[in-house]
Image (cartoon, rainbow, N blue to C red):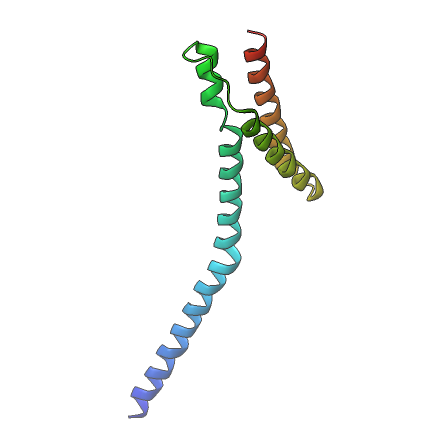
Length: 114
């Protein structure tokens, strides 16, 4: 009988260690990387929100510009993301958002001066 309870105790202890290992991985490895990935995806989507409309206007498919409130909200969101990155001294995000500003400004200039 002692052999069975000893084996059972080892199994419970091993299960507990595996459970703690998985919990540690989820909390300290997966959660931060997932949050960063979702943040990057949000920035990419934000930067590319106006591109289909800009391309359609430049190609002559339509002459309807995006609503000014949409453009203002997108630029306001980019500014807030830029300020956040600057406060956190996140160089990669500062550069990425800066490039997004430049690309959006070029698209707007191409449309306005077409």
